[in-house]
Image 1 (spheres, rainbow, N blue to C red):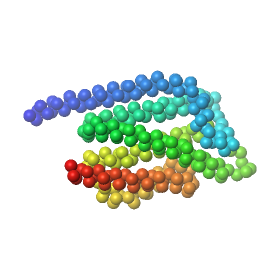
Image 2 (cartoon, rainbow, N blue to C red):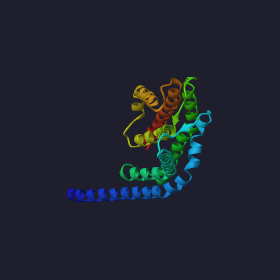
Image 3 (tube, rainbow, N blue to C red):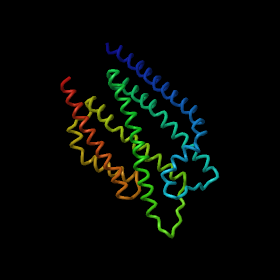
Image 4 (cartoon, rainbow, N blue to C red):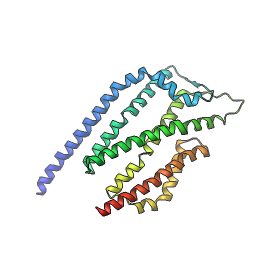
Length: 244
């Protein structure tokens, strides 16, 4: 019996690797098809993304010969990743559910939809609420006798870092829910580690934002709220597991 299991395991492992490879190839193919299309609209995309900075009355600058092309290429790839995020989340869930958890279709749909909504909510909150405040605050530190020449590439990188980081961070409730369902973590464990989590969130806020207290508060406080919501979700799931 043990020999049969030993033979079956490599076959299942090979099947999982093939499924992962096929999912990655599909995503890569779509990425290669959509990127040139996004590049065609990259000028409009850049104008929209630069709006929080341009609204302050300042201008962005390009300092290299290839700067304009690379700027449009970066915004094109970032846009395609944003568009493909529902597919990426679905593929990640299908891999996780095949290898780790076995859940009903209703539960799977709910998790996928929730993860997609939370990701886009994090991106939208950072772009429409957090980014304009940070930009205006940072520019206010410039002395009147100094000329501000901000690089367009630097601004774009900063914007993408903030938006995508917050999108991933907003997935914390989903991650906590799954780990609780799998029995890896418990609500008591999360509560006991709260102080360490708070310190980590403030350190993360310091890394994601400029050295400004208000900017760090605007990032750290929502993270703490998300963490507390995750604890409540974990308690609810833990009670359901105990009853089932």
